Image (tube, one colour):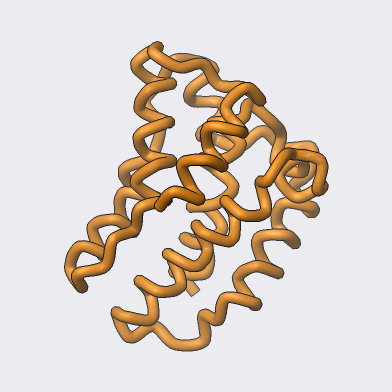
Length: 145
């Protein structure tokens, strides 16, 4: 159960913070290429969980769960977006960083999780701003991984 929640948080939190949008906008189909990025994050998380012996965490189920949570919390502002807007440290290391650490333990490269961590850190450091201008960069870097 904890991994299921982790997968949802690994997708919704960083993407809303990077793009500066409410939860529902990452699943409404209007944002350029976002489906590719979400699928890549889910795939990495499911792969890492499976390599650690976690069962009942299929990609399709996680994809549906992410969409469900995004829609059911549509008007909400994620905690990570709230943090970056208020110039507070986010939980990126505890969320996506956990997946990256677990991936390293089994020799798997969680490159898209690393990418969103880097982008969040850039936003936290003030070298990048949160907003829709990040979507093409996010997509092009995801497809290059």
